[in-house]
Length: 285
Ligand code: AMP
Ligand code: FE
Ligand code: FE
Ligand code: ZN
Figure 1 (cartoon, rainbow, N blue to C red):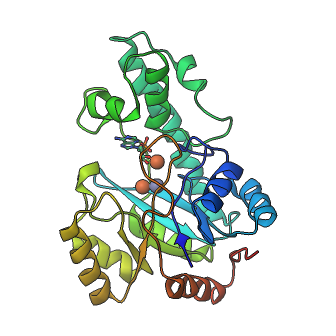
Figure 2: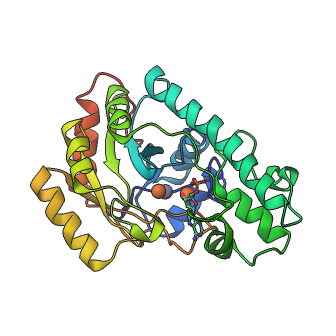
């Protein structure tokens, strides 16, 4: 069984509708796909309908933005209750802050380029979580750059004078909130230095003590050494290991199913979620 537990739709910074992500997953020969948009579950309903219609299993998930002393961390949450107030409050705070932060980035860019907030708004699905990729798409449309990759490399990456950070909860808090919501927490691409600074293993240990269940080890942003280290760290902390694509439609080269997760691990995620009082189920066809 081919299982991909990390994808994005245009409910955040992917380029496809949630239903199109599901169609693409079927075409990529996956039997299980998780929708894990940044800081929102807005795509769940549409993805669930599409999955039922197309005979593929759907894991409803999220990728929670976290921040520890300026270091950005992504936490995947699976099968959590989307209405649990503790997590919801943090997500709303992060989404609001993402929007003001994006406006500030665009104000800075507008001093040097013909780029305005309206241009960025055009790139965002109403209600979607705003991210730098939407700014990159606006810059692409205005021919300031050729694509998202160039926009990040030249103007949007951390350390750029245009870069601004946004509010996000600390990772240990986010792990607790996902678990409180009946969900299963998995740290996304924990060693991906290619994206910016990463946390020490000691932080991952603290997250594990707070209820982190797994590490996303098999991910294209990890080197072979980082994968090896991840396997060892997961084993020593009693965490399971996942692999996924982090698909963003045309926004990134990542292909659905380029990394996959074992069925035994999915079954573990299901069992862990089932043992908690709240949360939702895997939608099997
Ligand atoms: P933000 O959520 O605003 O901090 O922006 C980070 C998001 O931008 C990540 O989730 C990726 O989806 C995307 N991203 C980061 N680097 C690149 C890149 N080089 N090309 C395309 N997308 C990128
Ligand atoms: Fe993204
Ligand atoms: Fe991520
Ligand atoms: Zn992601």
